[in-house]
Amino acid sequence: MVSKVQKRASVSKKLQSLRSISNSHAHSKTSIILDASKYIQDLKRKLEQMNQEIIAAARSSSAAQNPFPQLKVEPREGGFLIKMFAERSCSGLLVFILEAFEELGLDVHQARVSCSNNFLLEAVGTINDNQSADQKDAQAVKEAVLQAIQNWSEVTQQE
Image (cartoon, rainbow, N blue to C red; front, side, top):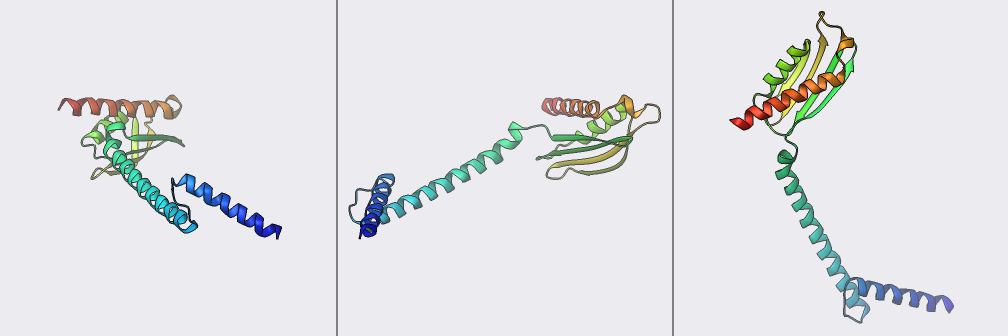
């Protein structure tokens, strides 16, 4: 008998909590549950709308907030692996990067580049025989490539 009373009290307490959370003014169990269901559906709709707004804002501002490509330079035996990615096409950027490689004395042995809808560069290069690999570290290569990107950005803004 005690368990039935406890169950009833527990259900009543949960219904009251549900009623207060969903701002329901109903008194019957069925009406409270229906109001809670409507409230949950409304929350789901609002959440979906907010997610769509966030996605739209991220798409529209991704190029504006991050105008520079993502850059990663990894040291390899006798050289470097350079990876770069930008979400937009960067017309003319490849020329600036290759000029930076040349100034560093970096010979590109293998490269993969895509410039259609976005910019993707993966290059494997080694230091020329005239300079030792010890004189150039990954940070120096990264700084030179970042400077090339900055130079490209300034030139394209002037146009």
